Length: 325
Image 1 (cartoon, rainbow, N blue to C red):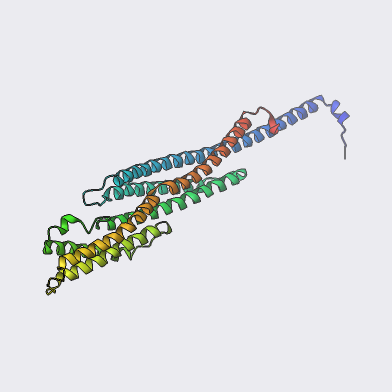
Image 2 (image 1 turned 90 degrees about the horizontal axis):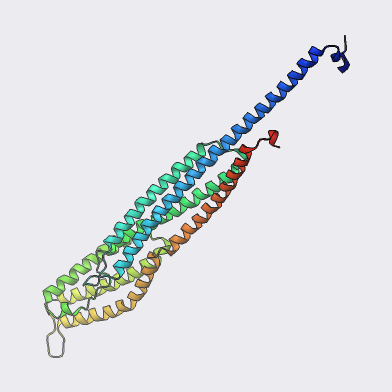
């Protein structure tokens, strides 16, 4: 079998020429395949980074909109605290309405995050971006937990405030305008209606599943309503008695009832500062803003990582050297 050495090719210059051309074409083909694969990989990375960047921007905008809604609700609450009506009660309907707006905003944000999460799950994640993907998964988990807790709180608040709006929270049951009428029927009707309203509220409150944040507030309201109902029941019982001892040494039923109302009001007056303090604590946005700040920190970390990856991809896509050199 014939053997060829390199010197034999010299005898065949055409063969050397064709071998050289073949090797050059082979190198060009390898380079083009490599470059095509490199650009394809860069393009896939750019598409993935573009997707999650858009997701992050959308989530950030949605959270900003939610915060604006929460701040409006906080401003309304502060106004309500400074403007109670003549009976000493607060109009909680405005807070309930603002809470409902917040609940609607929360629902929209949850839907937005779920949509983004599904987009990311269906996208093909480049292997070297698994860490970034895990970071986003953590962000979605933290966001969902925050929104679910916030939603639970606002739903509870609305149920509680709707219930309390039926009762004159903070009203003075020893009010002189009522008792100075000395009208037994008028006073009896007032406390009969009060007793009935409190019984309805207590029944509804007993059905509430109270989050830990609101337990003290809930218990203070229970104590308040129990003081009211106890006084109302005793006053109604006194005024409904058909026969009373009427001698010079015994006070009339209205006088006795007024004393009961005054003693109960004194106890209520001791309780009210605690209730007001607790009410102001739970309706402040401090705790909510702390949770939002936590999400913001996660967002900033993801944004920083995305920025670095963008810079790296730009450098790679702009490189004129083959084979990564």
